[in-house]
Length: 279
Image 1 (cartoon, rainbow, N blue to C red):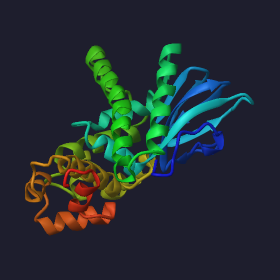
Image 2: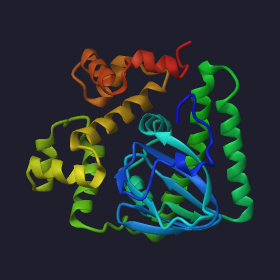
Image 3: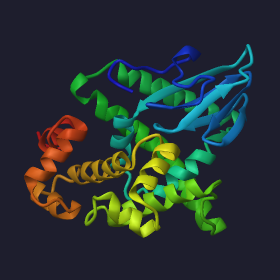
Image 4: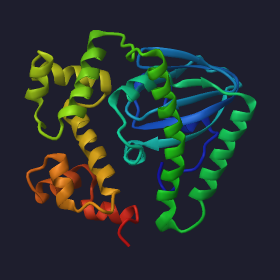
């Protein structure tokens, strides 16, 4: 979602079609009529009226068997916006993202559908009015509420059932273990050889598996996690850049700045200005 995006009802705006592909944009929406089959990686769900669908960016998705009367009201969110949304939600662990791959459909009550549609109207209004300098951050706050509810539901489910997220294949298991290792060791280790050794596989095979399962290279996944952590720390106005350098394992401030600019197009200080922490 960017400054020109609004809430959609035109299905041609959906980032998914009948061909399985890794999506640059995710989406969240409610089915308002008809049916369709949405597949995220190897999990298929038949979507019907009053179903809420939440698909994260960079997932392998297709939509097929779309009935003539199928309709949705939905928003779209790109990777950058999604990472900025996640950066202020605390320590989101990788198992949440694997959980969302298999739990992207929820049946809503009639009242819950109306609340979601009201939420969409608020996003639409905020995205088309007000001070443009504050518009993006306003939308981020709204999206954080949306995704936070899913994370709370996920934590309650895991706590209640006491079981790990089920994985369908050995490659998914490798990808999940890699993500958890990155979460644990990214400060000290930013080289693929370390993670491959931990997983008892070659760096080449690790790269191939992550590309196949996640639609991005292992280095890109690691970089995305580091960017997420840096953005979360930058939101804390009490932290100086040198503190963030130390907490994220960079050798110096210049190294952090080069990395952050390469992956976001702006310096850490510029990013802070965009979220209005620095006035």
